Structure formats: structure tokens, C-alpha cells
Length: 224
Ligand SMILES: *Cc1c(COP(=O)(O)O)cnc(C)c1O
Image 1 (spheres, rainbow, N blue to C red):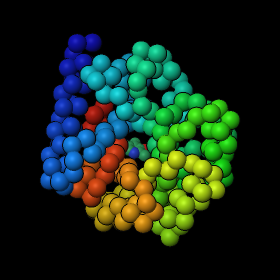
Image 2: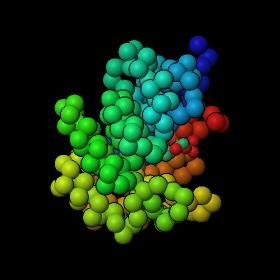
Image 3: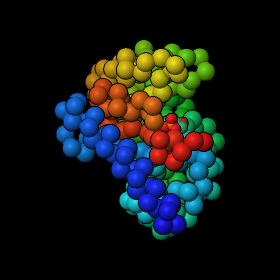
Image 4: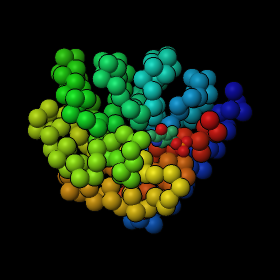
């Protein structure tokens, strides 16, 4: 345990230093960028050293996996902030609202409506991001670039969702910078303050383009 704890410390410090350098270069205020540690596929035992090392914000992409892993960890670390970063099926809305503190993947009307209904039912307001299909890829989730601003508006006005930002996953194998810049532009047009963009391979670029949340998995936990 001592070894894994010091490895977690080292990994967190290394990523945080790189984030901090990128933040300074971009000229953003301190604490502008949140590290979302993406713990998908890693067991509770593998995640715990990162909690012991002080990390509190985590991302999971599957509701069932989060449900198996996080309730126990949360008992010991009640101030954890858990983000859903993967696609959400409408039949999992109830579980997602019970489990997560932030939902980053709102991408269709029906899901927006069902999330709003469930939050109302349980008396809980969960901050949400709208996912944008920033590369216009057929196989990827997210609203289209052309729909993003209107979709944010209807989530807010029609359903009363607390939309705090936009989230994207750029296409593989291309420079991500232009996609991040486009998400930032859409965020301004939609009137949202937060941008969840950047992963292990490109989080510094994302910070330079205004990311407020970077989702880093393998650079922290190792290969999946
Ligand atoms: C897995 C995942 C990440 C983390 O990816 P890494 O390359 O391991 O940092 C970030 N965002 C989403 C949506 C993911 O599914």
C-alpha cells in the first residue's frame, strides 16, 4: 500500500505540474482547471491510493461500473465528486442521478427531459454538461455543432436543467487544438462557463484553449 500510495502521489503531482504550467501559459486564474481522474476499468483498490493522495474528482463512463465501485469508496471519502463521462441510456437515468454529482454527457431531448424529471422527483440538482459531437463523427455521441446553442437553451428553458458547460471528445488521429477552439467558441455562444475537454494525450492543448475540466485516465492510472 505504501508503494502504491507514493506512486499515486507521484502520478498526480506530475499531471498537476503539467496542468499548472499550461494554465500559466494560457494566463488563466489559479484553480481554473479541474482534474477529473478517469478511473474507468480500474478497481476500487487501484483507485483508493489516489483518494488517499488527496484527489477527489473522478470520472466514470459506465453507470453499472460506477455503481459497483463507488458507494464503498464514498463511505470513506464522502467529499468525492463523481462525473459521468460516458453515454447515458434513458433506462439508467434513475441510477445515474443517484450516483453522480455531475453529468457530462447530456446529448438529446429525451435524456434532458428524463434527467430533469428524475432530479425533480428526488429533489436534487445535478450540474450537467452538454456533449457536442465536435468532429461530426457518425459513431460518436453528442449534439451536432449546429444544434449545440439551441440545445443548451432548451435544456435550460424547457427542462430547467443546470447546464454549466460543454464537453467533447475530438476525432482520433488529428490535432485536437482546432476542435477545442471550436468548443470554446460554442461555449461562448451558448453562454456557458465551463469546458470539459482534453485527455491524457492532449490536456495541455485543451487548457491552452480554455478547458476548465480535463479528463485524464491512462496518464494517471496506467494503461487500460
Ligand atoms: C476514457 C476517457 C477519458 C480518459 O482517456 P485517457 O486517454 O485514458 O486519459 C476521457 N474522456 C472520456 C469520455 C473517456 O471515456
